[in-house]
Image 1 (spheres, rainbow, N blue to C red):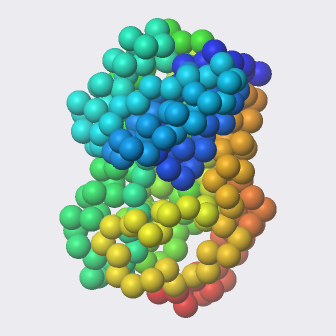
Image 2 (cartoon, one colour):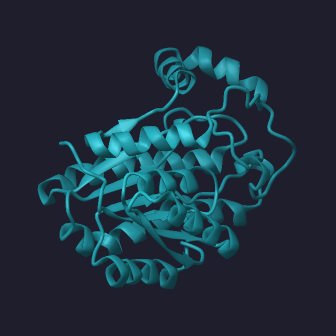
Length: 262
C-alpha cells in the first residue's frame, strides 16, 4: 500500500536528538504535522523551530516529558487530537541502553531499560489505538535494533528489550491488520549519535568498533520511505543486514567471534 505523508499527523518519541530528531524532520519535509515528545525541552524547541523553517507545509508541536510516565503519554495523544485533529503515524523511538556484564549489572538499570524500551511503547500504542483506528492510512513504527535479531555480550538488558519489541511488533502486525493499521519495525545497526555516550549503568567503554555507524538522517530517510511503501521491517545498511544474516546462518561461529567482547 502506497501511503502519502503529506498532511499526515504523527507522534515521534525521543525526538530531541539522534534518530528521533531526524525522523521528525524527514516526516515534516514530506508535509507531515509532527508531535515531538522527549525530556529535553530546549532541544525539542530547536527541532520544532527547524521544522517551521522548512517551508514544506509540515508543522510541529512539543510535549516535554518521559515516555515512561503515563501522564506524558496521555498528554501527547490529547495534544495530537487537539492540535492535529487525530493521529496517523506513531513512531516509538525513545530508548535507552546499558553497557555492563549481567553478573555485575545493577538490577535497577534492567528495569529502567525494559520500562523505557518496551513497556512505554507498548502502553503508548495501546492508548493510541482509538486515534489510529480513526486515522488516515494509520501505521505504528517501532524502532528496534539488529540486537533484537542477534544478541551481543554486555548488552543483555538492551538486547532483551529489542527482542521483545521485535516479537511484540510481529504479533501486533497480525492483530492490527484487520483494522487497517500497519506495523513497521525498523532494525538499525550502529547509528552515529550520542547514544553510547548517554547509556545507563555503564561499566567501561564500548568494547567493539563503531566504525561504519550510519548517520541518523540516512536511517530516517529509509524509515520514511518504508512508511510510504507500507513495509513490514527494514534493516538499514549492508553491514547491519550481514550481521543479522551471519548470526542466523552461523550461530555457533558467531558466538565464538562475539565472545571476545565479553
